[in-house]
Image (tube, rainbow, N blue to C red; front, side, top):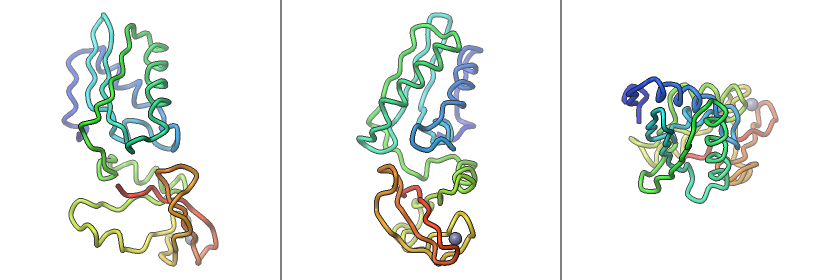
Length: 168
Ligand SMILES: [Zn+2]
């Protein structure tokens, strides 16, 4: 859901979005859950708040942690009756990352995923750019980085390993 389509009906919902904007991805703290675009809907009023989210990777071990973080942060912000529902019917893809997240990833030393939508599988064959020196003299070292959603690459130019957000 592009941010401009986000529906905010009242002050409580605007406040809830502000809180969510600051909840970090447990696996990639450079990104918030809003950057990841996993929050589908927020409904809030004086009685409580309900958040609907979609998981990034099916079976992502961070999902429970995300739900818990959302619950705690909203409670800390004064919301009562916090409910977090996971919608498994909406598929998430790395194409849904909001545009500014790519820059954030890069600054954090993680190569952002390529846009898949239009030219799959051609984009998957493009060389991966090193987030440190921008060289494309890189190679895949392992399908798995520190977490399931990242791959491990090595840059022959600056001789550093780096992770890449796995395109999905
Ligand atoms: Zn490099």
